[in-house]
Amino acid sequence: MNATDPKPTFHPASAPDFVPAPLLRKLQLDRLQAIVGHAYDKVALFRERLQGRKVTPADIQALDDLAELPFTTKADLRDTYPFGLFASSLKEVVRVHASSGTTGKPIVVAYTKDDVAVWTSVMVRSFAACGLHEGDIIQNAYGYGLFTGGLGAHYGAEGIGATVIPISGGNTDRQIMVMKDFGVTAICCTPTYFLHLIDRASQLGVDLRALPLRAGVFGAEPWTQSMRKHIESVTNIAAFDIYGLSEIIGPGVAIECPNHDGLHIFEDHFYPEIIDPETGKVLPDGEEGELVLTTLSKWAMPMIRYRTRDITALLPGTCPCGRSLRRMRRIGRRSDDMLIIRGVNVYPSQIEAVLLEVEGTLPHYQIILTREHGLDQIEVQVEVTPQVFSDRVGALEALADKIMDTIERVVGIRIKVTLVEPQTIQRSEGKAKRVIDKRGQS
Amino acid sequence: MKIQQLSIFAENKPGHLAGPCRLLAEQGVDIRALSVADTQHFGILRLIVNDAAKATKLLEGAGHVVKATEVLAVEVSDQPGGLAKVLSALEGSPVNIEYMYAFPFGHQGKAVLIFRFADPDAAIAVLQAKGVPMLTGDVLLKA
Image (cartoon, rainbow over all chains, first blue to last red; front, side):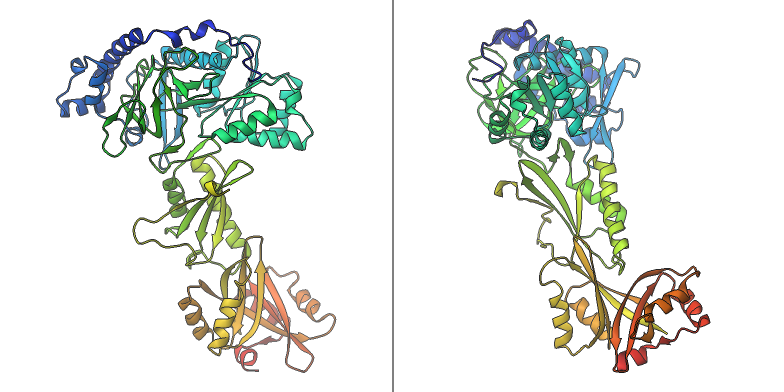
């Protein structure tokens, strides 16, 4: 039994989580029909694709009819940058966020006032599922800004009536001081950042077990059961996995309940399907495949059948907590090459674009992933070419620095760059193996 | 006046210097002078050899990136103050030394200083004006 749930209580905000399944399906269908109609009217790309298939919104008569609609992919957001998929006028859009795309340009997402209210409501329900309520002191260490994590968690924490500390990411010593001095009871951040915080607290002689902290809401990157065990044993808090993505709304798409057996999807707002990533065919509940989400009540930028590239399964059976919301297994891997490092999406194509920009030609390179003390580490190894080689140490160090700076500008995080001798990175006959993942070996 | 120096990139790992040196030795290339610049992650091996063209071909053939640069060689007495005298000659002039290294030369109590200047021609002018003798490639490589 965790410190969080000695006696599980029902929070009124959680009421929609317990809507009986038949009613939930009816609600989903009503909302699906409305949102498909809205997207058809307002988004040219979506309308043209439906017309190409000779499908109209009126053809959606049951939830299963969703399978007749085309998928939306990240490439669609990139190709319509910045506002091409908006289904509302900018006058109605009260907020935009952005996240990194597959190349230099970010992807942009939008919210109407009602969309922000929906987002806040699912974040409130997320915190409620974690046993948080009025009176809690929530330290929000997700980054504030274009990233959805900071403001998403902030609105939800305020919405549930907690005291929010909008500390944002970074400055670990100050995080620990605030946690201790303000009597923080819950923290929101990426799981890897929390591991870093644990290590730093121990160096500073701060005993996290002696603090009022009792829950952590960790997301924005995949993490493992062994990380949860480590966190819970070292700190005596309950660690909850939260799932979300900017394209759908941000954090608050799905949350663990105190049973920690899969994440309940707020499917009254986000309709899940699992597909075979190769064929696109919808798979039955219980089978593993790619998660596809449809936003049922997001008006500024509806996402119809958005391919998340996250691999999971919808868990059959009901959860002992009594929620009627289906659960997805925690995300373990992806169906594309996106890496999530310290909560930030990194695509090998971004690194490649930077190397080409800095060096003028593309050198042989490799991205090495390792895990040290539970933290994911990333390193880019770049072969020295005759074009960039110099007999001066300073020139080569400046080159490595310039690559690092440019990666930081494009990707948003600083990544170690190491220059290596020519011909030392293994060549492959087919598609070059750019990413070497050694995280399983440690 | 200017002498060709070859530089190759070497990772800062055991054995990464031996390979190129062995290769040159096997093919009869004589290394007249060398220096290694090292950083935390990599090193640069700088060589002056008796046959730069042959060495370049061999090293490139073995997959190394080779860079040729022009350096200047100054002969001084191998005794206290030998280097200081040359540096004094450069003081007050705008020429900048990127790096330098030194080695004893011959058996007459002489030493040779190898200088890599940002602008070798400007450095030659300054050194000549101050009467500092420079070695030609012929003398350095065939002695």
